[in-house]
Length: 292
Ligand code: C5P
Image (cartoon, rainbow, N blue to C red):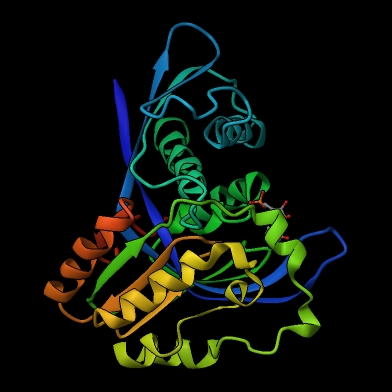
């Protein structure tokens, strides 16, 4: 029998880089939001030993370099449970290398499914810690919803949900290397930073206008010129009536917030004529019931 979970895409309402760490990573402060653009991840136990992966995207790696396999391996390493025969299937809808944590979200869904199947009493915090050993965004993806992510991304504080709104999401046909973009950042030279405290206040008071006006991602300020389509899409979203628009993660996906469905749907329709990877989305709350 297969157990299936949605793996939601994430957007950065804010992304700030505070400094470079001795371990080569960066200290971050980010407000993250899940949206209903989702992959479907299934896990089933098999008689045959070993881990197998199937997916609808033929070019995704299906060996140990896939983050879903890494997450499963780490789960059994950390829990000490014997590795059973396991097959994982991923139906991908979230664009890859897009700044929406699609791969991390698949890995996180595998972790939640394995907990459900093998060790339901495993505390949420431990599952998130296992995720953190696989990738910086996985702890957040295990939890989902609206959250402040600090440290490498693994120190999480759940936040009040983004008020109901519509989100036009659009990925230009290019991909950005996250490590290369981090390498462009000279933290002391960053002239602007997001107003994270103001964003937290706006979320607490359910002030969509205040949230929209505080969308900010410092990666936009170091993005090489060849990614001009990011700014083209941002400008288009604003022209089409978005309250505000921003890039998510290390890009190149851009999103715009709208209070109403109709203009958001129209923006997606117009953008999709030039950029086929355009999606009309809604925020999702933390979909995973609070766990011990
Ligand atoms: O943890 P993850 O494998 O997702 O990170 C990918 C890359 O992004 C790292 O190798 C590192 O170059 C960079 N990174 C960083 N600081 C973070 C998260 C990621 O420098 N907090």
